[in-house]
Length: 106
Image (tube, rainbow, N blue to C red; front, side, top):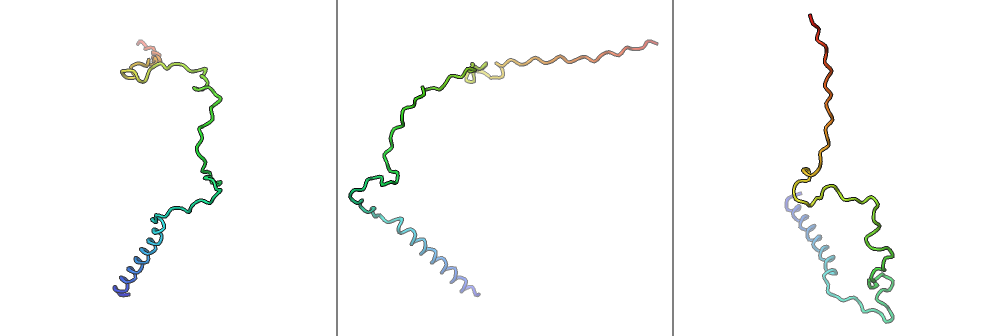
């Protein structure tokens, strides 16, 4: 193919694409109002467009059940200073000394 034919094909494809986009966008951009509702019809007509109702009151008291094992933590996270300074460090285990070997006297 020559360069002129290739350019012509590319131009035609782009024009067809632009026409397709225009055909799809025209209905979306129209400013028509929906058809008037028929007499006797309601606003929901079975499609779930009912007004939102407030939720039913709960039977449970607010706040939930207190936990039996709820205890205060040892350190408050919001207090001033570093948390590591407030925690007590566990004691280290003693290092066992190696047993002494008796020295032979000559």
